[in-house]
Image (tube, rainbow over all chains, first blue to last red; front, side, top):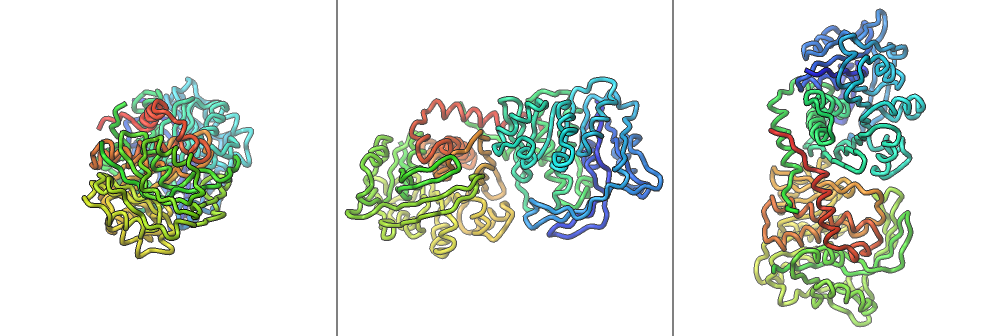
Length: 307
Length: 307
């Protein structure tokens, strides 16, 4: 079984959408990535940090999904990272209400010895220096390094971000972030510029409008599944990244054609994630539902024009 | 060869985009639909009206593409419909600067006798009463009636619009219009409500984000081809409708599976239309380019997950 190393936040979220609001619930990029990747046949570990206010039951929940949590540092007397956000009526935009970095402010990631030879590394959204530090600790060159990031780091840590972007094979960012990073409005031009920054593969996430995978001149497009109702978009991008990296890890195949499948798997899992608050839907999701919806993805996009 | 009857405007447009501006050039929904449908093996006719200020060369251009223009009335002393629009920087929104209805104000459509038994009827965007009048004149029931419309008629002629919607098989509208017509934000819910208004097939156009085809519980999605540059979106929706109805007419097959192909053909042709101002790109487009880009559509969306 191949190994997937995940770095990212493990956190508390408080979310308000037009459909309701939550107290502090389980959140964080690495949490969503780990849960999503656990739908594949992989060995995975999370590198992260929490305070001792973080409930044991949340950690157990990750362990129950066979995720190695020995790389999650628990800081005595520390408080866990907390994010609170309010989604607008169309759910396409949100305001951040609270960001308390807490233990994340001084986070020094430590990769478990067993995972220093992981085949696939998924660098979830975090400070670029933390992402770099994880790569520095690898003892064998991973087959594939995937990076997720966001506009926040473009605003306040661009040189460090560009340095880590140079070292990865795949970058996943959303459309607005791709435009900001490249200075190009056209996503085709944006992807071309980002290729030149390092990554051979550029994934641009367009939320309800799907995702594009660019590899040189080649383009693949995965739609988002049209849903009756999107309940809470929190973690959709991370769930996508978890499905993408989890499938790649399981299949031991980093070709462009296999990445197409990985993008579909990621989109498929993300379509469940948004159906309930936080991680709730992912935690009660079974594999039959996953396969059944994959069939919907297939019928949604496949056509028979003879050429 | 099957017959396609097209009703819609034949007009002058003046367009300004971030890339430049035009004087009065050839435009109108029926013009774009007709040119687009002419890429298929069909007999087609346009029902419309122009003033005697409309250049013979523009009419010749339609005739050269084997479009029957006997249903285009030329009003002596009348002035042709004129629309002028200004596109914003992202090309996703525009302001209408001028709308001069002119001869369109009193238009009474007359379907040529030869086309009163047309297999397919494409009702381009026009007053719903004009669209109804065309259907009233048919002597045999068409195999398929496709309706395109816009928010303008929802605002000022809703009862008449609902009456014609009830009579058609396929409606094509954009996402914002689908939301306005149905009162639902979710496009899945919007399509379900529009189904209940009459059409068995609902096509929701999302511009650069592609198009959705709904048929009861079944959904098909066609992406827009990611382009380096969109030059002028004018007529893209009509070109899409022309490709859709043209392909259906040629293939004599109104099944859901064949409509998938029709949507891809429509999206493919629309991807050319936006590359130059007005009808310019469509008029110098050859069939080899069309087939080559269809292959791009296929590689853009086709994947191989075994289920």
